[in-house]
Image 1 (tube, rainbow, N blue to C red):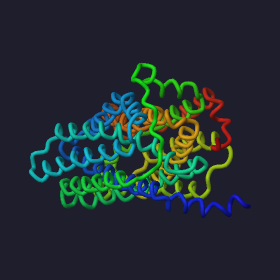
Image 2: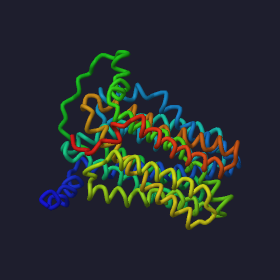
Image 3: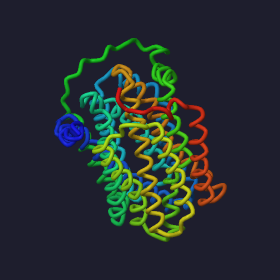
Image 4: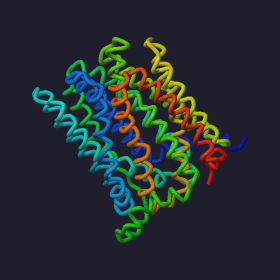
Length: 410
């Protein structure tokens, strides 16, 4: 088929294009750093407190700044150079981790200090995430956006494989070593973002007003398919966000050490990477709405299997399936958002998207930690998996237009 014969060349042209290549490498570096930080923070704060609730508070400390800054983030991303915003945020994150490294080496880092720095990093991530999302369509031709979204997801998942494993191994040398290494990676990501050169007409800086601040929310509400896709992921991740409890599973249920935690955090990324590479080579052509609902349903089932497993091997397999199912919905959602949104609105729409999706990860971690403290670890994860399945069935009735979406082509 002619279109199939052009696929390898199209894939190569995306990664050979310098702006997208620098972006891809920057995303790998920053996500590796973030995942290393997550392993170190999770293990260190659980060792300090022995409390699942504090693991949830780590998620809450990341959620609050993202939630509070959403409107300001979107407006900034549509008014200023997105590359500079991302680069500055990565410098701030690197500096924050450098402080954690110094405090850990000095032996005077407590749980309050960890939560405060996590809050600061969350504030920087609040600006970095939506800005990076809004930047992607300016790096490739419009017809390549679905493929670029898949490659962007592969960058995230490649880093999510390397980061936890590397963090788990380096933790043997102490948390300070993990934090210092992650700080260097954030600085490298900032350098790569600064190296991106693209020709882009500066956006018109409309006056700051209530309507302009809420424009992203207004736009999403006017597009039922986008609203349905974003909210579906929101509740699925919120209810199924069991990764915050991986330190509990690693130490208390599966009886492993930091290396086991690193492998468990890597498992979802293994499945997600394999699926994102598959989707980059074989873009979804038809029935994408049904495929999205199916993938989130599988995500819920895998969460239940993970919750009930007492075998390290079965737990790893469940997490691999969970990651593969999750990335399908991520690619479909991100492609829908990018294709349907005008460039001058992408910052604000991406900010709202990140508030729904990115912060649901952190709020989901808080929800998992809080329910685990109330009902126990295994029951809380089972409840989350069942809740995800219920949401899928309900959303199929509430958003029939999303169910009928056939193609990601504009």
